[in-house]
Length: 418
Image (cartoon, rainbow, N blue to C red; front, side):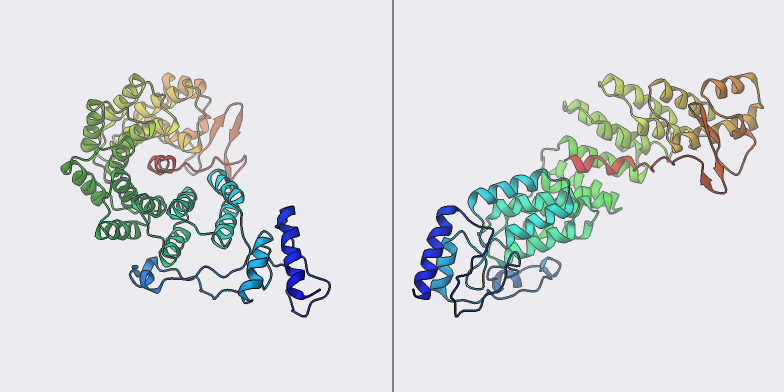
């Protein structure tokens, strides 16, 4: 039997059986073949014209390679067999497999698995459209993997797939949540130069990048531009604006944005309130900070530990030590588990109270009711406190029980859930 007839028979057999995971080598062959090694690393042909028009930071640094060797007719025969990978043909992925991969891409919590799926999709031999690339970029955003997002975006352009506004929003989102404000801004500007109209999501991604990159003033400028353009301002954009106020200590503007949300019928989130509370800290606005705790409850929200920490911080800045102590007691009454930061606030407050009022009965009762060790009043070097029935203290710089994890700043949480 001739080599070509052998190949034809093999292709038909494998196609009928839907075999895609193995390479079958004929017994008699004069053509050398390699053992299966996974997906081919060679991407589809690139477009030099589209690559040349990209900003430098968007151009992919991944080395490009040519397609694997083999004759055209023999390659087609092996593609009929389900895309078996040999030196004659390339690895293929069926439509059902592709849909399954994208489903996993949307739900996986493993970054390694996500990256492996992206590699498999890009090297599968199937053409990816703009919707496919947008889904890939959205997955990379979830893991704040801005570098891979820019590389995928660059390869997308090189392969002749033109991004739309949603695609730009996805890659801007990946850069924004990672705090890469320069890249986010350049993408925003590139988007507008190409005639695409930024929407609220585009502006919101830009604001997140600016806030997380420490450019809170520019973020507020972007919010002002949205208002001038009479654009829809979503709850997420308002929250980002309030977060920018927190970073700059602009408590008046933060409260104005909260009021504006209420006037428009937009319910502020827990994150928005927490950011506004922390914004009150710099100017020692402890009355406003504690009042916001009450407003949260009126809006049907339950203050969390960060809410109380923000109010305690404002009281501490204003040297309202009894306010800190009252807030700590309220935190415990709300069945919230105090953290190390909570204990540090109340420890400093108790020491300052002792300095001002002495060790009176009120202080003694307070320590007893809140299960705080009296040693906090005399030990200036280390924080010593009670957690339930156990005493936690530093001995030689090492805590005797497992340390509480450090808490994230309140502004870092909300953008990840957009």
